[in-house]
Image (cartoon, rainbow, N blue to C red; front, side, top):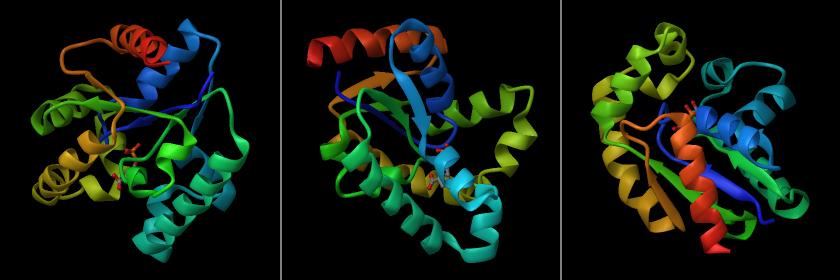
Amino acid sequence: MKNVILIGFMGVGKGSVAREVIKNSSYMAIDTDDLIESMENRKIKSIFEDEGEEYFRKLEKNVAKWLESSVKNTLISTGGGFYKQTNLKNIGIIVLLDSPFDAIIKRIKAHPNAAKKLKKRPLLADLKKAKKLYDERRPEYLKLADIVIDVTKKSADECSKELLKKVKKHG
Ligand code: S3P
């Protein structure tokens, strides 16, 4: 079993889909943001506030190196900017969770913890800037992806089943 790397924009549902995949398969799962928070013993929001984005990106680079050298048979969910790591292809099969920007924002706002979800993501604070980031990143996400899953109007369970089917086919 190769690693599967979930990429996609903030709030698209990488964490929710990962949780369903581990229910429906023998994958173990890790999350790059969770690894960084535990390494630093502080929240992403604080890392951005205290040290700035560049420092956070360096931490992502360290995580990417470690994933390549040491992690196998694992479903890896990533932060929305992790795709920039140049060794992504060496880590595993890249799966993009894709959805239009408006649908992503609608999805976050419909969540019972919407305020918390928005607050913990510094790059979503200004929706105009976030849309610009989305427009810049989406073509890059599509270029990198081995598999694309359109998550719009699908449950996390449906997405996880589609993911497992497509990963199996991909080999
Ligand atoms: C970021 C996405 C966040 C987190 C950080 C930066 C980004 O993760 O890594 O706030 O650059 O898109 P999620 O995609 O899980 O929100």
